[in-house]
Amino acid sequence: MFDLATEIIAFLAAAAFVAGFVDSIAGGGGLITVPALLLAGFPPVEALGTNKLQGLFGSGSATITYAAKGHVDLRRQLPSALMSCLGSVAGALLATVLPAKLLNLVLPVVLVAIALYFALKPNLNDIDRAERLSPFLFGLVIVPAIGFYDGVFGPGAGSFFMLAFVALAGFGVLKATAHTKLLNFASNLGAFAAFAFVGVISWKVGIIMGVAQFLGARVGAHMAIRNGAKLIKPLLVVICVALAVKLLMDPAHPLRTLIGA
Image (cartoon, rainbow, N blue to C red; front, side, top):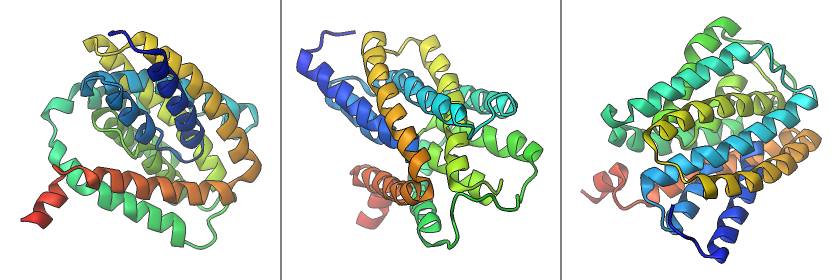
């Protein structure tokens, strides 16, 4: 790890705190921390690896907070968490052979669609609804698929988990948020293990950011528990749109290339 000035460390810690707060409610913390790490001068791969380390603290903090308040049964969800972790490991290890351009092309459209779903669908609240997919199939198919995506690409994984829990598992918005953080923690753990194996993590910076992210996530989770869907829904919509815009701002994005052509 190269030496960083105190003000850069403070900047990264502040970014991690805000990311933990936002991520514990609506996901999308990487939208803040990855650009912050790149701005601090980290190479892209090291930024991604370090982001997974510090993200473990935030998703772990949020998971503990939600579980302590009874919004997620950790023991009952362990099989799904394991599938999320394994999917993420596979995604991280196979990242080099997947068509990243295709993911880049489709992701902004999908994120906007998720934002519209949560913004326009009536009666989205904290009350559970009828499930459209059995818990067994949900854990066997949907969870590892999203975990795989989180390992190979990452942005929007929390939004995908949220959509799946609400639309397929029939969860209320707050319950979906709580379970999303658990599976996000598991997928972060899998990708982190793969990045650590390759040796592309800045441990000191990751731990400093992780402590800040832990605190931010704790504050955010408590706010989400108090306010439920009325806070989670609008923030989720904003995060999805912001992430889509950020991706489209890249001059090399395939959609901009197509439009320019």
